[in-house]
Length: 217
Image (cartoon, rainbow, N blue to C red; front, side, top):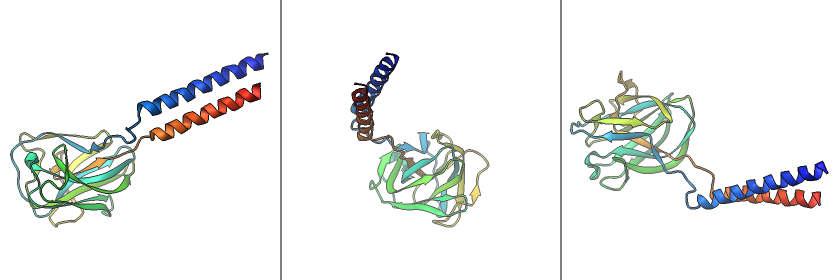
């Protein structure tokens, strides 16, 4: 008799879990992928800028594994880039992991004062240091200038500005503070489970519950 009650309890629990998975899949339908996160959120924009013919950007350490799906260039006044921008990202050994050219004007997608162009996803590994930089003939800035402020994404630490006097070249010189050059940015595009996957999990649990119920019967 105890085995019957035990099987009944297990089947009910499995059916509840199946229902929960199916409900979650329904609620999150149409939201298969998390919204991209800007690595740098430029929270305030000042008025001072300058021009630079080399490569400007910043270095950082990844606090967790993350996927990068787009690279971008700061668009002063958000009204379009005055020229195209080459943007690259490197590992600590100065190996170029990905690069892209963000087109002139409004060709790039504007997100939070930066215009982005897609790349094939790359994965940055937790605990490792990377640099991102751009070569751009238009207006750039240093975030320590009056009126500028930024917030790095939670996945980043040890953010600081970096540069190289040569264009399209890995960044080898660094500022002594947390200021960054604007400059380059990237989008973190980590995925969450597809609603279809959640539904399949729910159906699998439900199927197991039915099978157990038949066996108990």
